[in-house]
Length: 410
Length: 180
Image (cartoon, each protein chain N blue to C red):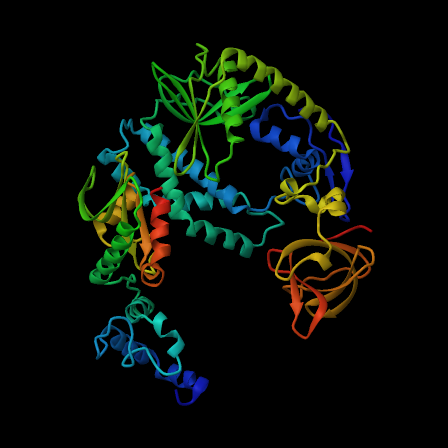
């Protein structure tokens, strides 16, 4: 990445950023994300030097995402541990000793939960209380995670193939990671890359034997036919990655594996692979051009904006998506933009909505530390429409500990 | 209770002893009731909550708070609960799954363990179903089963005793979703 980064300003006073440059490699998910909403992708991956020192906009922890990361991390850890010990069967007595020594499934999962949540430490957007709540929810789901891990490992992840032991030194850390031929056996979290196409992926489970090359992707969420595209793309990467697959053996079986069942996906033929390669090259070219656009287009729609973590920075979202406060039913969660009129009490403020005609709204905050700037526009995320028991006609909005608010420049 | 909320002040003055006496009453109810009665937990003022009062559960929590003992429910209670769940599952009429009560299962690396309920699918895949105490989610009723649950690849599902007691259809649904 050698291009100069372009600075941009946001509506939030003092918050400016540097747009991301064209990535060296794309992945299935990054391509999907930039295609779904170019602006969301760009805002999420921009740098905000005055906000924090890390790359991208500070993310919020999403339980489902962290849950998936925990499951994948434990599958990788267990297969590595068993491979290190030269294990050939998941049911051998050694496994019992190993799992016991690691604290049992629960201990292993909880350790992974803490490890995954460590990435949120120092994140200016997340309070320790919020992180604690996410942790509690993940602990509650630990048995479910352990069961999914058992299920995935039981679907051919063992015995694991011997892996190359890296001889990399700390000085090598900024060099591209070398890949080595994937031999017979099973490989978890196997990277496959095409430098020519500038596309990379990590195959959750790659199984190679005399008869078949099987690509399996583990999914911890709900079944979705879009997942089929991902394994087809892995088949393409496997075909193109001459380091991992020097004999160019085609993927003969593709599977999407959910907690309860597996779905077989028809592997692409040689001709279909070429068509997919051409189509993917075009997608990458299009994605590249988006990264050069200093005013990336937004595509506000429910499916894109619901889980968007940078919507407070996106005018397009606020102009079309949030419902008018008068149309929101009591107890419903929504986002609200308004202008601060005056303080009402230590934890309540009067705001006016920006619609026509403007409506007066009483906003109840969760803490007296919330100090809205009078006269300025503010955006409130994740607030609840409430009712005033003494005045049913009054429009009331409640903020909770997980609600966020952002004052705007004008 | 005479004194209403003011009674709490007297409780604090009595110190630890009052909790030890309460524990003795909960663990050894003079009426030897199953869950609660007027000799231990029930009173006129909590009449709407009678169905929720459980002296064994209260005792296990109090014992944990006083002495740090891991909360447990008696084996008979867990057995009764597993039996209730088994009967409901057997009645559910789910095709291609058979349920067996107190089945011996050989688990490599552990040995033979008794599965409170063994669910076997037509394809041969099996899952062990057991009941856990409400205060100890993820703790199996026996040490052996706990090891199977935590240290092997066997699929084990533990259902909350309280869910079995209060909402049996929900408990069965949980199991059926697990073995789907």
